Image 1: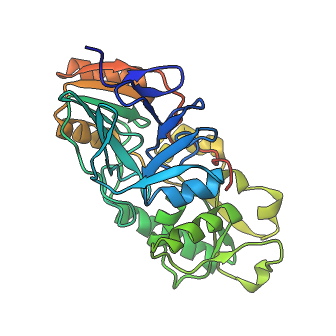
Image 2 (image 1 turned 30 degrees about the vertical axis):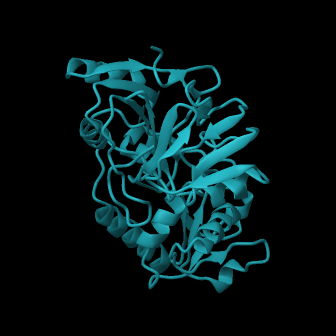
Image 3 (image 1 turned 180 degrees about the vertical axis):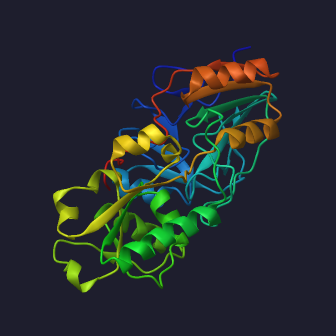
Length: 335
């Protein structure tokens, strides 16, 4: 019997249901784990995602034919039973469980083990086969508790404000930016947002997510009227002509990659804060263990090293080629 899921040049394919998961080439039916651009791409005939993920996907992709589904709701597609379960990555993000003739696969998309108070918390699904990312699949990547990082960011911002500087914080427009917003101390000063961040904020607020007050940093905004501000923007906007109009400033990046000293130096920011919407080394191992899966398929990241570790420690692991990117220090396409 053929496996329930196979890896093709278009994406992860289920023949029993004739659908793809997060395909990177146009297909008839795409099941999407979340709205980041490397997983939710334009051009598919039909889409399915969680109700919480769809609004951002529609905002980014335009007029798409899409069906929403609740977390945990089983749906029969052909000879496959599918369901979506929280991945903890960004609001609405899901793992997709596929069962065919008793064989259970879980495609995790991107995921995070730590509860962040914003995204739906990761829920491990028992399965035979688990498809995992390995963005931070090295032992050096170990995250501090979110509250510790929040203290570091707010202390830096307060220092900038006291020195008469604007604090620029670079983060993905979807997920990371909103997570950071919930961690910021609004007593320090106003929070300004790049249009890519603010547009996403508006979509998520309309879904009922509680986010602090922000001010869109439009071309008409006078920086002098917002002293002590923190500006939240995609990483690519830091150091741009738009940013320079704010005068004296410090820049910081919020990313798991800030764990690596060499990366911090190359980015030439004033600060780097280690916080990620992906699982760290221990988080990856804990989540994989919780699935009970014996067969692990390792995608984007430190694939060879992580798969080798898994094989040396009791799992059957192999690297599979995909076009997912994980977390980078460059901005997603602005939306």
